[in-house]
Amino acid sequence: MGPPGWKLSAIPPAPADNAPPSLERPTNRLEMLAYLNNIALQPTHPQIRALVAQINAIGDRQVSKLIISGLSLVPESRIGAICAQLDAEAIVAAIELIAQVFSSPPTLLVFDRSDRRDLRSLLRMARKRCRLLGLVTRYPAAHPAVLARITSGCRAVDPVDEGIVSVDLLSCLLLGRALQNRARSSHRPVQIFTTGHVPRVIWAAIGAPVHDIFLQAGIDPGAMQCIANGMLAGRELNLSTALMQWDIETLALRPFPKLEVAVDCIRCGWCVQSCPTAINPAALYASQRLHEGVALADRRDSLACIDCGLCSYICPSRLPLSASIAEMRNQIEFNLVSAAGGSSI
Image (cartoon, one colour):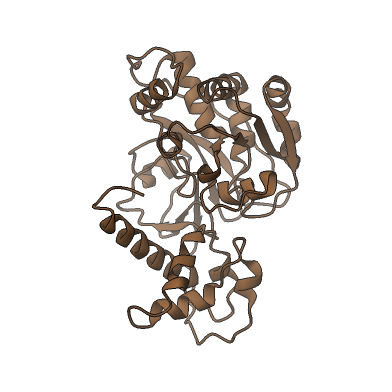
């Protein structure tokens, strides 16, 4: 969104953070868990697991690779370049700490080649700690499962199962700022998009009304549709009730579109061709609509879905493929948790 060839304008400095946490700099995984919980470092995107969740999942196992991702899961966003311009030193400090608590595994910093100029300070400082890999990225390459496959040949649905930990630059920025300032963050950078205008970056307070965030950016949202986290896999927000969350990377305003009526599947196969995890969205959609107990294997295939939204976006019949797969996946995960006696999987 925005005019062709737009570039990042001046990014405002971060506001003052909240009161300092009580913990000292962590030196091992247990201390890191306590520190992350103390500074309340949350998932920064719905499709990126928080670092604390990955540490819990990997336990005492050896980390085979640490991937620091400067890519964005939202095609319209340039969050990597934004973070690098805000505070490259804080990012490098966080990378060094994360590598230290995982006993210094091979560390890879992945970035979009088109952002190289905006990342040059970060790349220069990180070169001694990380191997650098510039990619010409195609959506959804930034998803941890897809990125682990591209960089390491990992085929696991969850890269942590093969000892791969993935951390995005925003998480590194927030962790690094906490280390420097001994404070927990209360704001995150957000890109604001409005039809026909150059995108802008602001610091949004967590818990603030989204309507007020637009006013803070000098935009009256009026009677417009608000989409969080992009047009492919984002979600619509109710401007009268929605509050800013940690996992909102972009906010976009546009006129309300005309609703498209879904029709029967025409067996074109486009959803299969576009799926980055090689599942059959149309078959899963059909399975989800059948009676209970049919095609259980297909149901389990839904666990490989990464919610990129490509199948729904490309479907000429306008079928709600992504939403139906998410519903199926949620049900199978609920059944697995119930079978395990309520413990998380």
